[in-house]
Image (cartoon, rainbow, N blue to C red; front, side, top):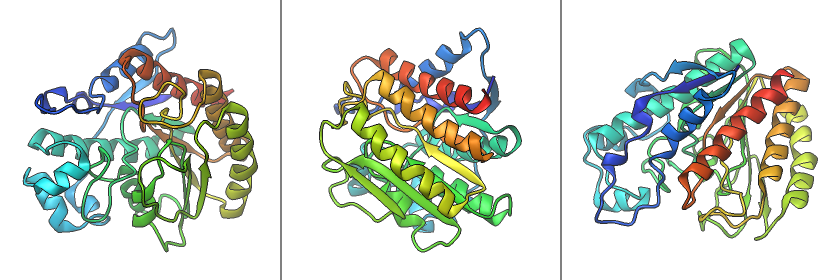
Length: 303
């Protein structure tokens, strides 16, 4: 089966402030791992490392990084992130960034690998936002390129929300291409500019979504010719998601992931996925969608 990067630090429900109605699904990370462990052919698990502070500061403002690592994030920034930052959450942010980088390294060896967390695409240069502290996708891309593991990175972001932080942090780089396909009227209100943005109207269904993806992604891959694809595989485009505005079904999500995996496999491009968004009242249903995304990506890549 496929390599899965995970760590117990990914689930830190105890950090949630019970005085606030936080929507962040702290439980889903362990649930995803447990669902996959129960498979007849479970993934090979790898422990996510803590990425070093230097790699984070290569992408983010050092002052902001220091605020996070000392759990001294100002109230206005914590409000923008969505929860107060504790020392254990700071450690988690280092761990999830290390996990996406490790998944990318494993993908270069194995073809496909998944991080069981990550996809923190709203984190900006000097602040976090939208439940995102450090931008693991930008950090992993920068490290891969700096260490000369690859020459060009394509980031495919199919979360229902635009990857504004990723686009902003990597803007102007000739060695990274960013693609975000998202709900036009969803968060963030002020969008950034990716290399390619596709904005979809509220209620976009499976057929319209897949038509747009199948038209855009192959041409983009062929134009930028990446050495690896980092895939933000959020499942919040699902029709039952509380924070989404699109209308994909389970079948539509599976077709989306099968297409992404198949396009990478057909060209021999390594593919690493990060978990991304997924918000619902039923945590088990959300976790199953995430697990299904990894299963489908692995099956489409390794078939």
